[in-house]
Image 1 (cartoon, rainbow, N blue to C red):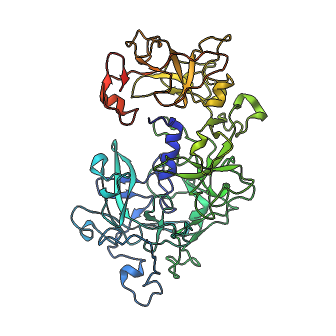
Image 2 (image 1 turned 90 degrees about the vertical axis):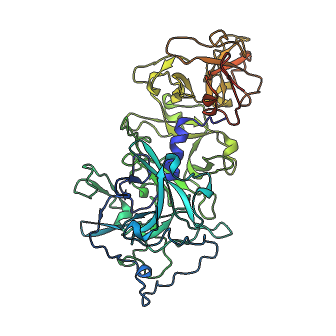
Image 3 (image 1 turned 60 degrees about the vertical axis):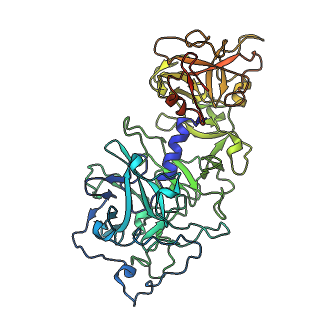
Amino acid sequence: MRSDPRWLVTLLVVALTGFVACGNDNKDDDGTVDVTVDNADVDDGSTDVPDPEIVGDPIADGDDDSPCSTPPDCLNAPVDHERFGQPCISEMDCGSGNRCLTESVMVYDGETYVSWLGGTCALWGADEAGCDPDDPTTCPSGTACVNFGTSGGSTYYGCVDACKATDTSWNPYDWNCGCREGYACNINLEACFSGCANDRECCEVWEDLDDDYQRDDGEVYFDDDCTNYCDGDDDDEYPSTDCMALFDCINFGHPDATYHSECLFDSDCPADARCLNEVYYYDDETEEPYYPGGLCLKDACHLIGRGCEDGDEGDCVNLGSTDDPFYACIAACNTGYGPEDGDLNPCRHPTDGVPYTCSPFDPTRWFPAGTRDGLCFPATVPTTPPGNDMYTACTADEDCASPMGLGNCIELMDKAGFCAAYCNENLSETGLICGAAATSGDVPPGVCGLGICLPSCDTPSGDVGANGCPTDTGLPDFACYTADGSYGGEVFLDPAGTLPAGFCLPACASTADCGLLWVGVVSCNTTTGICG
């Protein structure tokens, strides 16, 4: 079953795709690189250089006198593709059907910002026409499939030069193994992206307010106390002259920072962490930030030397899945307290009117296994308290009552939303969420199943509309699934109550509906609304 809460899906998207490179300042709202389809270029926050000559890359220029004309050996790096990742000034340099991400340069306040140094050959397409990140065979050997972002309502996936972020003993390389000069090896995706160009770039945030892809006064925020630097900007000379650079920002962090800290800059976070700030990470439709006040996160905490430091109040968590893990240090907590609990709340207190709360998380997916059962995440606070009751119709999270800040408008199978909350065994069995039984033996109005509060019902496999599930106007049609563990594992409830016969999930109308929620489903019973 695919049942990750929407907040976790959001976090995964920005975590996996947002850490592209220091040189890509004009990120899309979800942190991905924004593609301009018309000219097959990438909006990387700079303007194209009119001079057609490839500049700044001694390897491409064939300068035998350069100390970097022969890069160091990288024993376990992917074998380079004949064209992908190679320098280019137009698509003609990349072969039929391939694209060229052309070099672009911006000068601001005496500093030069370079993106896609020397150009690089790649390939991408919209939606199914692109590659599949879950299937490496959809890209040529020596390349990796990455999400290039959205444009015109389509999501673009592309094949770029692959690299190796660690040696065979899981030690991260301190140079860009498998990438050309000026390119950083993304530690998550093991793909080569445009690297940083100067030290100041590692201490600033650029908000392109007028969308002209140029740094202007009033758009660049700089951390005066930042000591970060660009590994590759040797004595202000770019590119590097030692052939052993990461071409990425080295973040020393703030000495007092924890993973609970507010942040705008990466330098506001613990060392090697990054800030999911309000400038780059926000909902394009509502223009609301995903992480009010910013959220600190450190990628690849499972690697040697990248663990969560003592005292930083973070844990190494697998935010992905068993077969597709994504490890990151993030603020962890024990569930049971929320914004209304004041100083007892283990997470950040109100920030610009939006507090953080301890949101349930499956501890079996932690790496290593943690003793805490939640992650600190922005709380849902109803705009018109107390909001709708649980299991009523809604269109937004703020429509719903929100115990401990965990209320959400749940939308499954692309059906109408209903008010619920995120839950776990601890919260359910202490009667704090989902609806406690009134007296011993009562059937509670809801149970915790699949990580969310779900309505109870009394006629498993009964016909839609006659199975004991809610039928209020505006709600989706519900199916009554048996609560005996046959579907999605165990359900939890207040021990004062009696386990109901079933729990409600949106009813399917087709097998396609079932594929949106369950894995390996073969049929939909349209009478009961249950996926088989």
